[in-house]
Length: 476
Image (cartoon, rainbow, N blue to C red; front, top):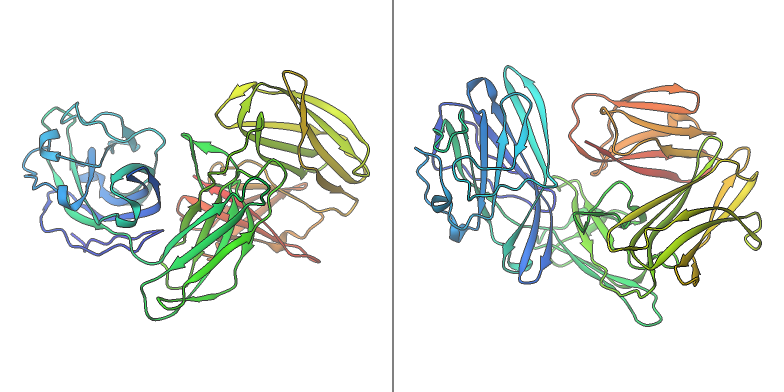
């Protein structure tokens, strides 16, 4: 068995060689990527990705993963499959069917009282040839007792079997790998400054390393779209600030206090995402500055955007809360003063979940188009959204994703009045990804070369006479 190594996004992970293993089948190179940690009362919600290589030709039809706090780590005899009593105070269990195409299981065959994590997770398989596969599970979320500042090293086991019976034999296992928060650490908050505002943010990036190392960070406004009731860093989040290369050390923290940031009218409940990168960091570090500010309007508008397409303008908006809302009137103006109604979109009425709306202006005006929403309540009261402008001039640049997440490992996008040679693709750490490009009219298909991992990527257009336009695209 190879030396066990772990890698991380928000953490550096301690290297640990398991004290015991059973090598009837090969299960090697387990890696854990810690995406984020967030407080939840006295607990800390942890979100991780897990990957490992498995030899499917040598059994491993069913694979199980367990995670514990070190103080609760049990001494399991893997001569038999562990049951609930053997697992003790386990924090998380995953059950994976690796017989054929991999999938996640909602039951733990060895003991029906143990409930594996299942909802909201995604699993991918990369065929490495020779019967070996690299399996990756994303968005594994579970609470850890204790505050986030004191999040301990976590310990984990992985084991496999060729049977799904109540007492399956153990064919291989790997014990005692560690997961530990380390440097750097990102903290901060959004200041409400009630009642007048405006919102500001505090940001602190600290390290215990006495030797300075170089980092950069980008700040994003969350798009307001919730996943299982929670904000998530995704393709729709909008960048508003990127730092230059900055030195970070124990004596040189990065600190900002009461910094103003751009947000539009009625969109002041959005959170801020911080993405930290650096040559010495194994991956990007992602953290959220949460927004606990209150808004008492009938509609909480999280986002209102417009995009120039080939011969039309696409408008989209997102609400996170609605109370007694009736409908949205979509209005357009040529001079930002006199508006006319283009159409009406019915509202959900009452909702505490994320709702998304779209409207297509199929005949935009030549030149600049100004748009706003008239948000009307059931009792006839109304509120206007912020105004957005879309340039529909003869030489206006159109650059828009056609589908996100990308389908079939291909990124499709619209590009008008710009040179496609100025398009680039990067991962979150800034590494350029090689690709091929094909074109049909103003629609392009980008195919990355080689095997790239699932996750977020940056599609960038460097305009001839202006700055770059970037789009975050999710590669499933």
